[in-house]
Amino acid sequence: MQVAQLFDPDIRSSGQLKFDVDFRGPVSGANFAGQINIVDASFASNNLPAGLQHCNGVLTLTRDRLNISSFKGNIGGGTVTAQGGVAYRPSIQFDLGLGVQGARILYPQGMRENVDANLRLSGTTETAVLGGAVHLPDLSFTPAFDLSTFVGQFGSGVEAPPSRGLAQNIQLNAALDSTSSVSLTSRTLSLGGTANLQLRGTAADPVVLGRVNLTRGDIILNGNRFVLNGGTIQFVNPSETQPVVNVSLTTLIQQYNIDLRFQGPADKMQTQYSSDPALPAADIIHLLAFGQTTEASSASATPANQAAESLVASQVSSQLTSRVSKIAGISQLSINPVLAGSSSQGPPGANITIQQRVTGSLFVTFSTNVASTQSQTIQGQYQVSPRVAFSATRDPNGGFAVDTLIKKSW
Image 1 (cartoon, one colour):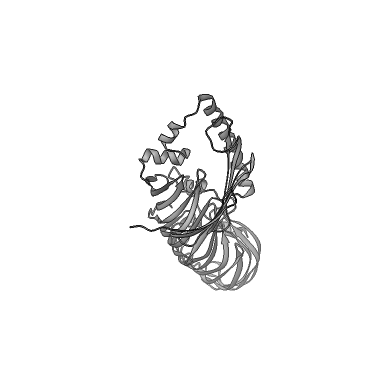
Image 2 (cartoon, rainbow, N blue to C red):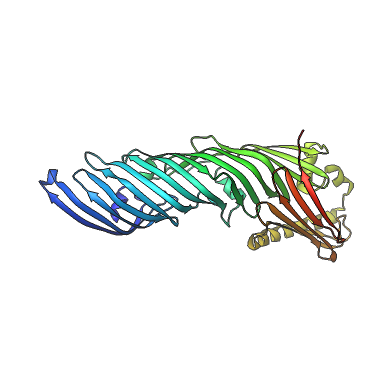
């Protein structure tokens, strides 16, 4: 199967080609007729997000063209079929149709898609176009999904020169759409919405264009849960995949409702802050970072030695909880040390909070102090829509409350 490397030097292949061909006429103008059988062949390349396995087919050879009589194989756990052919006189030209059903592909890093597609490849080895339609009936995050790593791969910077080969010469012109309601869930991020995108660039360096509408979701940042009010992610740069974000998030810290709006490219994002009751931007940032306003922090100032002890304890617990939460699959694990004589609430010991996303809509919080079996709070919140949620809470005294949360703007 080394013939495949004539088109792309990075292709790795295996399998058998069985020739049954007649050659007639002089060498300079011979006529060919016959068949080529493909038996359990496989193709893979570093330039492509998925390889082909267990391919079987029959190719019919004529004087100036190779036609696909039948072809079927596997790609990403799904099936791929092909029709059309390749002309080799007077020069190599493609005219191929590809059908993909139920393929699972990992692209970009941290994302998994089920893919159905109808594509057509036409052109030459020097310049070709791959067009058609791609449908994504299912999108999900991989278990190893990490938001910072995912966003970082779209950041700007010096890129390695594109690899040489057929994939670099194939221009993409394909429509890409999702199901009517995408639902993505990881440990720390949940998103719902729709996508209407275009694939451009080359097969070796694809570029995503279009728009993603976000209708619901939430994200855990710095130990706080932020609920998505809505927003969009647009891809408008024709040179590279560069998401431009415009989303609004809300969280509750103490008695303050904090609203944040993120706008701009992922690597140059700007943030706007507001709160109810109203606070200056500096106070909102301090509240998000430390759980207190600057005024409250000054009023409860602790001696230098206690502040140092609290800082060291918090740093140690942060490193521990980060690793434990990833291994255990916990959305958020917080261990806040309570030192003797400090102003923190609760008896000396540690306040432990576990936040777990059960589904994209159900979120459960458990909080306790290890020094007291009576200090336990359990809360479950079910998000019906971006504006409506139901909450059930069991407080440390054994009381039980059910609330309906309705958000309305005037």
